[in-house]
Image (cartoon, rainbow, N blue to C red; front, top):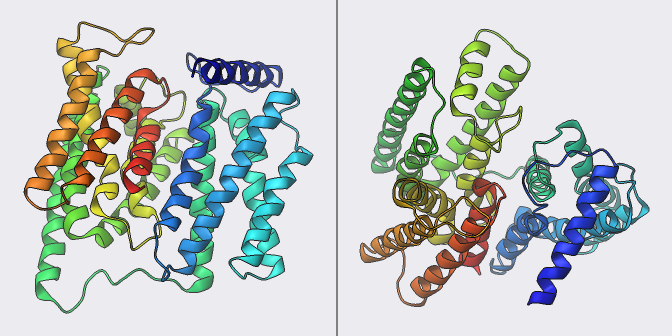
Length: 407
């Protein structure tokens, strides 16, 4: 194990040196996060493998793309390790592009032109595109975080393009069942109340003219639990639609702030100043990461995902991370080596998630037995990783827990 760890750190050090030589600015005070690079591809591939023989075409395409993303990540890391001319397009990047094109052609039965275009898009964006994103947004990402972001964008673009070409539609948001309609209206009203509470919290923080503490920022994690749990249990399709709309609004507001577009530019700048996280640079990525971490399982094109993997983001971010932050800052005395996180916070993170999961099992929302044993082990493992990593929690932890819970 020690040899593996030393080898990993040796590779990481060489890659960081090569990035600096290429004038690519890495997020400060953080390691490379290489292990993050495989998460999106692994999530997509495992989700497809869990489907039965009746999987949809979009699910197949997502699974094949996940395999392509894994190959691209390996090629990118290898290229960054051996070469200092990181910004240039390398011949090695054609390998994942070619293999992904062949997967689309031979397995998904796409025609040659579509297979080549999609394969080149996946191979190019997930290698050379990662480095360009880090170049144009200096200091915003670690390498692993940037790979995850770019892989997520690729999956989104591919899913959107495939949906349009296949005329693929989600199940209807409502039917003739009056009870369903009433439930949806109730949820929308309930979510509106949660939105108003969030606006009040932001307004109060701006008027106080002070920066929000870590605990105050975790208020939005709690609100996320209140929003997502009812939606995931009773109306996941409606929540799917709502989460997509909110994602678009997030990006639109952030763009308005960056380009100083009235009439909301001043309010958005004040909100950014009040709630900016230490891991944010000039772009407010933390709330976007939180939303993606909560919604990612819901966005997977599968009809065979149980509730437990679907709530992985809510469990680890809304419950565990919030408890860790509160208990760690209030009562934490013993810090993990070389980190600011406390052992007490990690224990709170584990126990809060276990109480949440076991509570759902008691009321019959999720199964018990082996599922709870697996969930317990997964929660402990991810909580320990949370305590030891300096990567963005909102991005890494939900993906890890999703992989553990869906396998």
